[in-house]
Length: 227
Image (cartoon, rainbow, N blue to C red; front, side, top):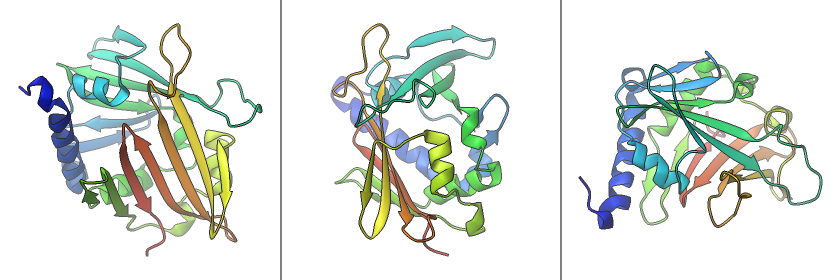
């Protein structure tokens, strides 16, 4: 067991092991569309405490469901202006724990509207080849192998995630989405938890060129521009 001072290092080690498992996706994972987008860990590595560390707190709700303990987290979408969309585009995240290990992560069903399971498998497999930068706590990878027409475009992203938190126009068009974690009776707080995801699109074709997500200071990016 890790001592308190080494907890962070132990979490990083297990996350790195998961990233290595993505290199052999079929041996270590399954994808399902039953009840949402389900990522199944065939050889679980992450512990329940790792999720608490990543989210900076325990789940909003825990339920026994016959297969294990189902944890619920809710990412509440943030807005830069007063234009709100209710909670339609919040992201409920369900995590199935078995023997205090992460067995399944379940994303909303709407995530499957424009992304097929075979395409998602290619995305996850590409992350297994990510180049790790320990200093910046980042991992960058190149998406490999798919018909470019399968990759969601700007309209698909907006239909799935709603209005972006911010839009930047430069050499590309960048949409940024920001989420805080719902924390029981209290309102969401930026210093409590923050998840940010960015999408860069070609200005003319509106095709997706890069996707990036940051949680707990850890950044994962995927480049779609290479053949």
